[in-house]
Image 1 (spheres, rainbow, N blue to C red):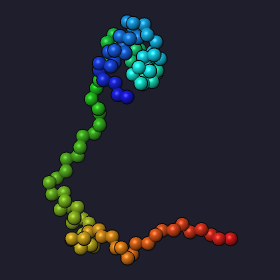
Image 2: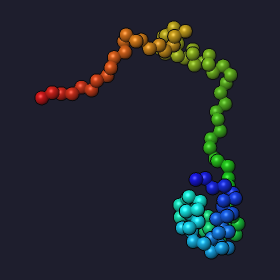
Image 3: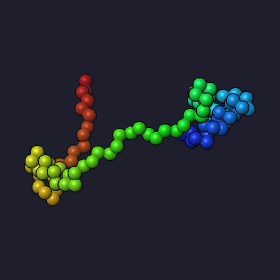
Length: 104
């Protein structure tokens, strides 16, 4: 379960101010006992409740507007397929792939 900022404040209040055990608080919030200990330890060390940070993922790539033309041109050059049907599944040529088993 993801902890919101208000949840972190309640955890710190329950453990430090009200004296509840970390195992009891962990069951209430449905997270691990160790994670409660980490939040409380950070609060004792820094003197404030840990603040949520934004995710640090990579931003989306900036693609040129004519990317479709580039991909089609490259596919034509590499695969030599017609424009309309770039990838077409032939029903007659589709075969069930069976595992080869050696009989002895």
